[in-house]
Length: 106
Image (cartoon, rainbow, N blue to C red; front, side, top):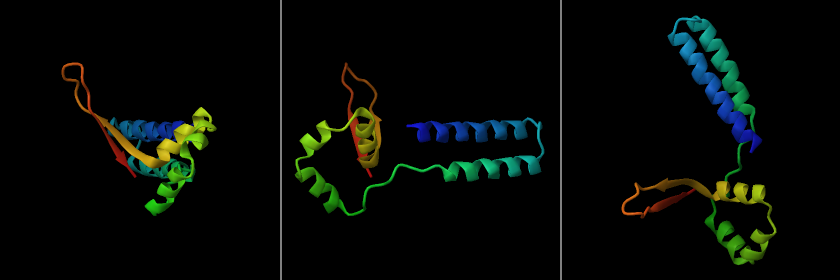
């Protein structure tokens, strides 16, 4: 969770740096140097590990008493699990009190 916050923080800093350059508060050279440093720091942050590209490994895990394994996870571990499996959740516009969800898996 901390890594996600740090990533967001670095991306905001890069956006603010761009604003400084566009508002002519810093030179192009300063912008390039500072942006490069921020991107290096951003890339050093560990990312959530992607699951194996082999779908059989995921299916095997689900078949091995997934429910009891999931019950033993704390909330942070559950979030990490779902983030390693789900790429994106899209919500449709609400129509008549009904909303559809589209889940995109990795």
